[in-house]
View (cartoon, rainbow, N blue to C red):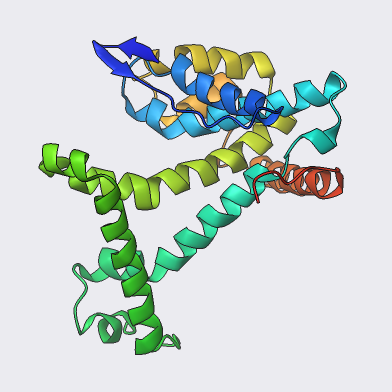
Length: 245
């Protein structure tokens, strides 16, 4: 529990009573340390910061003699595989909505005007619409109190639970893997401690001036590719206990 701006917040952590609790606590504690206010930069980078220090927690445990078989190092990749799968499932619906607005009986035929070579049929499109709709209903049903008390914030709730939350985790993981390989640990500590005071900077300025990353440079993409390959090789070859199956 922690208090900020006169509000009380709780982090409810389901403990496994093993070493996984250490990395879970690290992840959630980092959210606490940078949750001094709500601002764009904090919202965009908070999952990256927590996932980066979560990975550091695994490294620390391994460096201090904890057997990898007591850890579930592959859990992050399983989580992001699920997030990427769900975002892919929603892709055609989000594309249709962004191009054409509300979904109706003409949406698929109108969408095909943009993609003349598309082989998407009506049955496939309807299944994706049904999946998306069912997930909307599920989120609303699981958050009835919030929906009833904050009717004007339902759109924010749906975007966060269905799309934005998963996207922040997925991009945060990719970025954390890069930073883990190429950037300075103390720079990330500084960023975490000061993210709430950087409202005058945008994300690209923070990446460049604080972390030392020029996102649009060719080196960034080459290094990112190398970091991802190296990390995937690492987790594929390490003996890890899949505790969260």
